[in-house]
Image 1 (cartoon, rainbow, N blue to C red):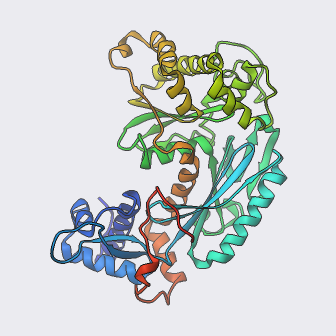
Image 2: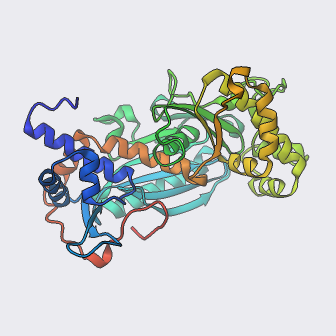
Image 3: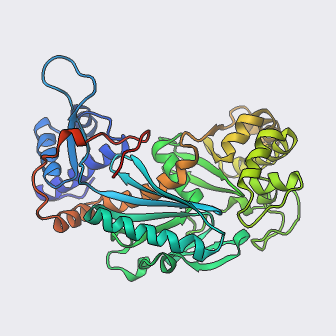
Length: 420
């Protein structure tokens, strides 16, 4: 049940359903296909598309291939439609992108930083402000992925960078969620989250966890992170910091970790562990290029990393019973370069009842873009609601009819980029 009790409420509900379907399919399905998928009457679908076009939310283009007769139309993002700004802040650099309805990503800026909160977040805040001014009313929100646990109101801790309770919104020059009317859906308020949780969200929406009821996603960068995904949603935990599987004692050792615990899985898996294995300096978000060289040249280091990953996966599978385990970041490379060692370490540690049908262990379909895409999805989740669309209409009363220059419009996909 959708809860609609009037024709107006039903129309508002169907507007959201249609826009959500366009977004989730990557703006690739025709109006006829969407009409069937959503079980709408043909006339209803036509009215909805026309209204969304007038509101500057959708624009239709002929399908690339169609049979004789009237061209088949594909609803996609309006050229003056909503844009989510998304940032992926890693330990040594950040990437900022603009994302349209349907999921097309246009990278706006990439910048290294020195590992301090001020050098990482200050310039990012300036870049966000500049692109908000440039894009104006089109910006519907800002999503920021960070390589550490994020507590309520945007406080982040990244132990190996010595970040303690860093106030991310303040350093970005943006209001915290609690300070803004309407919460995190307001255009100027960032949606801030852990990079692994966002990568898992993207995998559930656009990757190999689509349609999976219970999945486990592991993101391996300098350290590993992981989160359980249930019905397409990462399990956040009571205080929002539930994506910290890398700080479970799954490695078998008792060495102290910078997080304050001992024997963390992060001591044996990830780029820091690769560097440590071959005697190179590690920590502080430094050494990405060296770690890439170790991945490419040191079979022994890669094997040790993959075996530690496999042992931890076995423990997590025994605990959570996922249908699929997905790997992103360096996890993809570890599976490709030492998949046999990973499985050989994992399978003997599985409970007997799991060995006949162990979960699939698959590399992410999204590469390193998962965290960025998840940050985007968090913004569109707030926007694609009846309240979000109503706010767009109120803020755009003079949007006008859908009459853009056709030659300036291309469809949104995850595969390409064009200037915004």
